[in-house]
Image 1: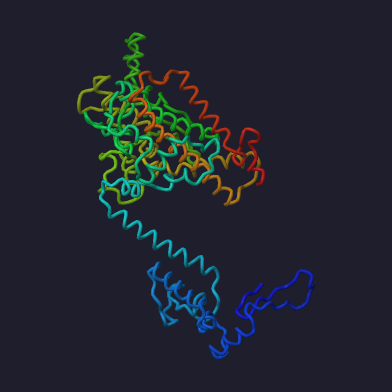
Image 2: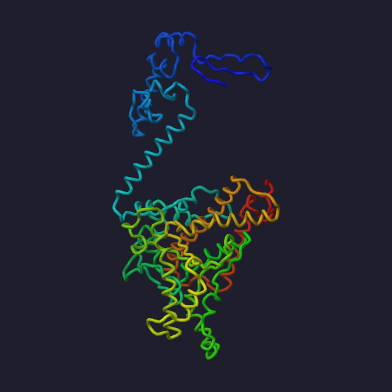
Length: 488
């Protein structure tokens, strides 16, 4: 079908090879008036606009509005036209040589939307640096809004409180979960064991109360282990995804550090003292170890989940996406060496200024290139190292299926798998971050805390495993794990 001012050339399916019929868009009297107004030319929008109709006047007004919204002016010289909106209204939708351009309306509104987004960005960045809207806008990335773009299946389902918390944090609005607790003193400190494993807080001062945005509720360390549960579940789920893709991975690889403890020291300790010694060494155990499918070396990973506070989210440093989590990621290697050095001094009595057995053994066995830091932020933004994980997992899973079925995926299939894994990780972070605020608020007033024993941990591990195994028919659900790959 070909469209023009004079009419539409259409071909009926039953016409065979006959010439196409002509269906006029305008009555003949209107076409004659257009020809007289333009001296016989029906080029562009000029014939319609020269008639002085209400439709023509409305088009001219809307065209000028689009130019204004897109910060464009009218260029009367066709040789100097740069964009689609530089044209005067009578030449809209055509190139300089008179050729009709495709998808003009789509291109125009993309331009208008881009200018509107730029203006909104400038308005928000001009807000005070402590404004919650500005903090959320500057620090959020694509993973922060994933929850708004997914279908709430079993894997991606959020409770009402989790959804309220995730949406308010992403937009910088007051958190409805915190509303009943505003003004309540931040109380019920964690035990020493729980604090040892969670060193990310800007510690609330005595007398601090719950704020409307959940900032202090996320930074306080409450009894009940909300921080530790988020950290451990996130690391465990990532390892399960690696294992699902055929990679060799494990959480808390104790042999990375324990193998460097002098045997004579442990030989002289009783069983009770040895258990106490290993408990004190717990803080120096890495979070994840996995074998990279590319070069085949074992990678050691330290995971940190940062919360809202001035030491982590400094508005003066938020000049690019993921500024806070990337800064935290870059600190983890030296911080881990300092942690080993402190363990050497406290447990192995290494003199100051000397390198102890833990630090020396770790640096000799693990190079800087084989150490990775992952950081998950308050706004569910991910550091660069963590953001690269979906591509590696997708490549590992593709290689596994290639070796099994002997067929290569298309670029579209690979892109779909990367996006699916990225969505899985982003939704996991969204859910766990929301649970930290919710559980900390609950534990401030709870007289009896929820069970934290082995049975409760096993139940959480089973729930995470069940969600991972039942991720829907396209990635291999419980009924047929091959659906989605057989199309290769």
